[in-house]
Image 1 (cartoon, rainbow, N blue to C red):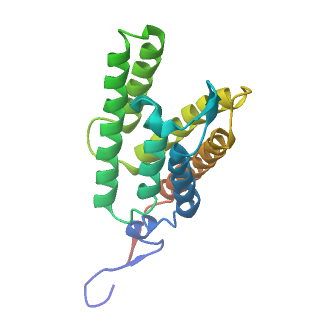
Image 2: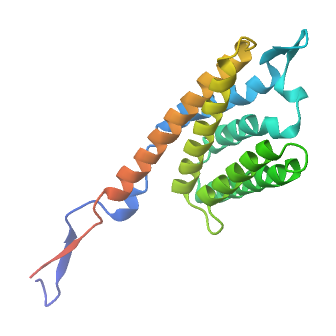
Length: 200
């Protein structure tokens, strides 16, 4: 105590500093998402004597590639406003998948149900309110898991071409990047908050 006033000093780093996460996943997951999007324009499989390119297929087939592009852009995000925009973009994509599933119920019921369920899962993952970097990372994990399973199934067929294998590899890379991202966020949140001790 000096001059009748109590002095205080921080014994740990201020909590504001804990939010400065390095986010080392960015180059890895950003490149993975960009490569995945590029695969949309590469021959993925053979069919009826010609090569099939995803961009020539119906729009629901585009979804893994559009998510790849979205996450490559998200990897460049540096602000809370950017995370809010990323959250909005992921919500729009999730509801687009849901609507696509509803539209397919009349023509391909089984596939439509799967797409509908996937859209709802993605909507739940990103949430309906507020923006959350954790939820964005979780959505990345869900998207990359589903994409990897989808591409792995097609890659095991004798019709798969290089574009399909590259799509599988980039989906797995995006999965690794998203998991690393979530671990970084979990570790940052686990750090202790600043405490103020008073000297008497």
